[in-house]
Length: 251
Image (tube, rainbow, N blue to C red; front, top):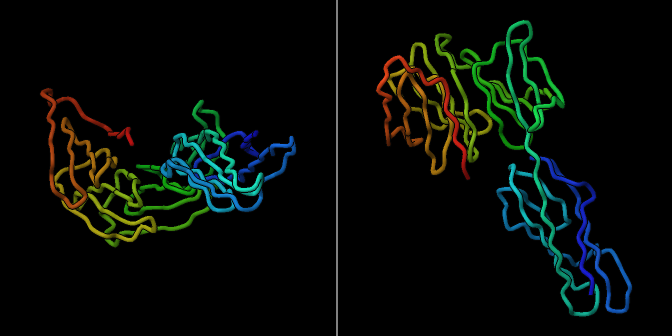
């Protein structure tokens, strides 16, 4: 019995889609495409999901093994094949100066596309479905990587300045300074669900697991819960050190 799974494309982009095809060989040497009666599974939905039609969708830059089961060939025998689907990541970088916008690059930093925004960007982070979140002045923006503007949120106080933005677990976290200092918690449509005051200027923000947020400010690093509860503070002994940004790397 031969069991084969193959991709129509060699890799699956984050937030991209790809149709998977399963082919099975019968006991008599026959071969047929498995187009009906297939159960597709992806054990690591954090990396990619697959629907009942074999349509796989990349979620994050990780690897998953997608499996197909079928009884369409050889009576009640179950055909099972497994293939590892790599998910390719992207790099988004904002720029200012003679031009203002966003560049989209692969992990080797080769540009694949770019788009102009027409405003200075103070913070950027990647969201699901090829979307990008930007901070600028008293505004937060939600773009598609193609450059299409999806949503803009303008805070009514023009003295507020969003300094950075982070996206994780269906939430958007943005730090702000100016007439107020703190963190706003929003959904992916940029509607606020909560906020809390910190009492200090924030130069960098990133989201960790378990609804936790990491902040950089002066010679200090902070770990908060999204509810506003302070968990941990780290103060570097040299007051002339200034932490400029913070990034969480992990599951």
